[in-house]
Length: 244
Ligand code: URA
Image (cartoon, rainbow, N blue to C red; front, side):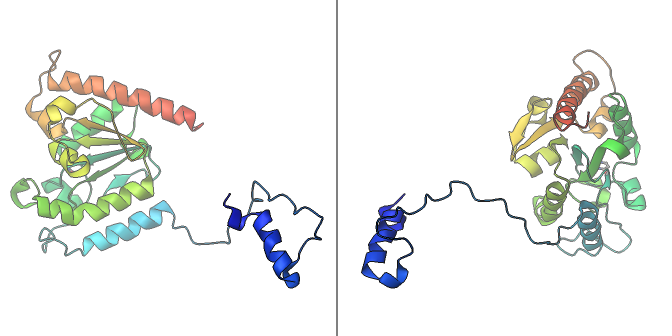
């Protein structure tokens, strides 16, 4: 402790100014407490996750941060469990997602549902699903870097509110947008620790639809291996949290 702040320094002040003499000259100053007594924070508003998500979705519906929100299109903000331990991030809504306002409901989404079910996870109960871009790019093109950057605050807010320990990045666009990494084929199935969370890049279900072989070493087989790793980490985390 610097001498100017300690009891010795305080005694020096006392001698110079009797008004400040809190202790008798021969009485040692009481030891400073090493631990502060517990204090209770005054009541303060902490927005429930569902409120943060509802407000994010409402803002997203009228968002003008890029040109993707055109008349006749719907925002696809996200769906699933607001307290999920697993979040899956895809690329952008397609035609069926745009029509319904829900992520991953077209053919790729149906495969995704099966992929989760294959390891005993239910996408509504156990997972929160969203995309890098919340509006459908025309013709299903990949969202541009500017569109991705404009939309990123929504995604970051979702991650912060839901606070999932596990985040699955489905495909190259999500991998690039979230971790600024390239090489989905090399990185899929690898755990990447970042900002206190476990990220795993996985093949995008649309890629699996185009490469449907179940051969050992093929994309579907590799995804099955990845899902088992994901299930194991999910079990370890839920056990640790006493929710297993
Ligand atoms: N592909 C995606 O990346 N997201 C969807 O929501 C649907 C298809």
